[in-house]
Amino acid sequence: MSSQPQATPKATTKATSGWKAILKRAWPTIRILLSIALLWKATSGIDWHALLDSEIQMQPWWFLAAGLTMLSAFICGGLRWGFLMRKVGFQGSLANFVALYFAGGLINQGLPSTLGGDSYRAITATHLNSSGKLTEEKALNEELHHSVDLGHATPKLRLSFSMVLVDRLLGLAGNNLLGGIGLILGGATLAAWGKDLGYAVTGIMIFAGIVIAVILAWGPACNLLQKLLDRFQMKHALPGIKLAFSWPMNVGQAVFAIGIHFLTILTLLFCLKAYGVDAPIEALMIGLPALSLLLMLPISISGWGLREATLSSVLALWGVNPSITVLASISYGAITVLSVLPGAYFLLKRK
Image (cartoon, rainbow, N blue to C red; front, top):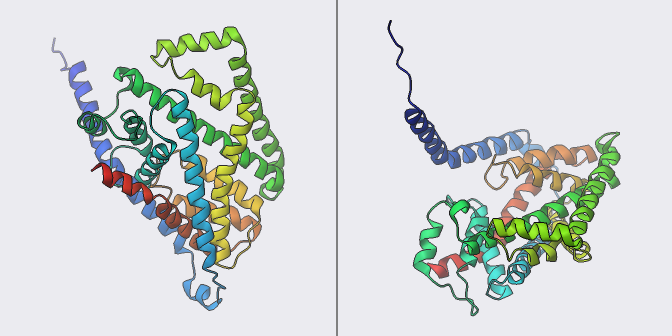
């Protein structure tokens, strides 16, 4: 009786690991190609001759205003993260954390790095001392050039990553609240159920905030959370979580998060104004938050292509010329890159 040769578990695991390694190396290239394809798709429908003949009333000074609002958004985001980090015991001034935030933002804009900007600032922050200098730079370089395994990471590194996560959750809450408000104001233009969706999104976010605040205020639940954090070797994370989500700090954090995202909306509004277009603010309050959710998917490099395709489709419902929207969106992306260039100073200084 002949037996069929069977693949051993070891061989199967090795083959799977090989495919994962190939995909990991190829993924940045795939994202670049997807970005180019999406950008081509968004710009292919533009009649450049008709656009030039339309005599666009350019107002370049609006680009300066757009740059200032985007720069302000990054500074505010860096300050929020800095307060969270200092609350849980990390050293360094707020200026140090803002500089790290800009450096991370620059990496996230598509620099040739296998390490995300969030990971960069989380790791580097653990090496800041009270005077703002980096300590143990050899160990820092080792950590930055190897993938992070949080399962075997030090408690300090886990704590740093937890505060980056809290910062991101606050940003997500602000994005969703602003999008919900935008749907309440202008959702009827999208669909008959658009306004109801806005109330639902806003209501869910407020309800989630209330539930988290109750958990943090109720002794037994808070003690249980502390035990859970202890189990994951993040026992000092609770003060940062309370700073973000406890009552009444959660109200201030929500307003601040909405304000940060509103600054980015103003940036896009000013880019449109630079091309002589006055877009309804509620349209931008719907389009940009929706885009931010899409950007959580690793589809394109820093949203290039995806941003242009999404915004031109959404703003067309309000009668905004898709060609102008694409131009304004490209300008928005360029201003975003320019705004995080101060992060290059921190990266070069460390080198």
